[in-house]
Each structure stands twice: as structure tokens, then as C-alpha cells.
Length: 110
Length: 122
Image (cartoon, rainbow over all chains, first blue to last red):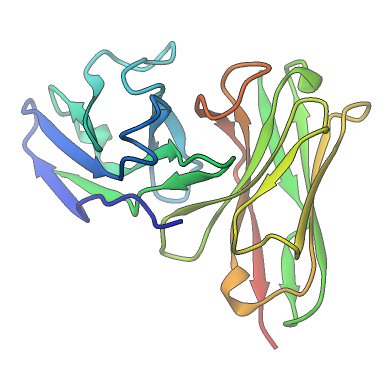
């Protein structure tokens, strides 16, 4: 199972919005609404930010939003803050009882 | 609070075995599927395996199927990963991660443990 494709890096200034893409195939992102996004600060465990494409767990700011179109999912972070600087990973159900992650995107707040 | 704590990592020679453990607390462990996800040093996340809430179903990534075995003991709130025939490419931090919704799969991994480092080297 190939990993989902994410850009290696993204950046934005405080207060701006940034969108991170995650491209899969018609067998994973394109077929299932089981896309989730994770934030990972250096040396820390990943944290769930978005699940089932666009749902936010309690405690996650509404500055974080998710969407999907065809085989590509997106995470948008609005009103960028310094603490948003982290690695972000997308994940999807890949069918046949397997999970798959993207390669990760390093978000820099300029 | 909901917590997962891994243990059992260490340095092991290629071809040898290791068993990881994950202690769960703060929630009804027997109601949730649980995954193992690994992260090689400086690399991204890779899904490894999942076990259903009652242990009746187990699924694996192609890269570990036949070498790794996931199991759980609901009476002890413990998750395990038995790793045999270890290879250099298995070197990683291994996290256990709970499904975010009970009695379901693939809805999202939440929370995660801090992970335990496995280094396969001669």
C-alpha cells in the first residue's frame, strides 16, 4: 500500500490561512470518508485534529478544518498561530482492513 | 484521564524477537479497537496493525504480516505486539493508538501513547 502524497512543507505568516493537501486514490480517499489529520510537535505523540474528513474532536480549535474532493483531502489552518508550527499527517482507510498515512507536511509559521 | 503507555522497546539483533506492551487507563479498554503505528527516525508515520475491541479480529500491514502478532488482554487493560524475525527496517518508535470511537474501526486514532523505541542492529 503506497503512502498518501503530501507536500513536504508549507508556510504562512501569523494570522494567515494555509491549506495542506493529501492525495490518494479512488481506493482510499476517493472511496471512503475515513480521512483524518494529525498534528505532531517535535518529540511528542501525534494528536488527532480532524476525523471523518471534516469533524473536529472536542478541544480542537475551529481554526482547523478539513474537506475532501475526489481523491484529495485538505486541511486548512486559519488564523495561523506560532504553536501551529508542527508536522501534519493525513491518514485514510485503504480498504482490505488496512490503514495508510501521508508522508507528512512540515508547517512553518513565518 | 485517557492514557496509553508503551514499554518493551530496546536494541535487538536482526532476526531476533521483541514484545512490546501498551498499558491503557482512563477508559473502558474492552470497548475500543487499538492500533500500533510506527515512525522510523526522522520519517513519517506507518500503520502496523489493529485489533478489534474483543480481540476476535486482527489485521496487519503487508510489511509485517507473518512476522508480527497483535494481541490484547482486556482483563489487564493491556495491548501487545510480538515482533519476530526483526529487520533493520523495523527500527522505529512504536506507538499504540486507540480508535476515537468505540466498537468501530478507521474513524481516527485518539489518543496516542508516547511510543517506545525499537532499534534493530547488530
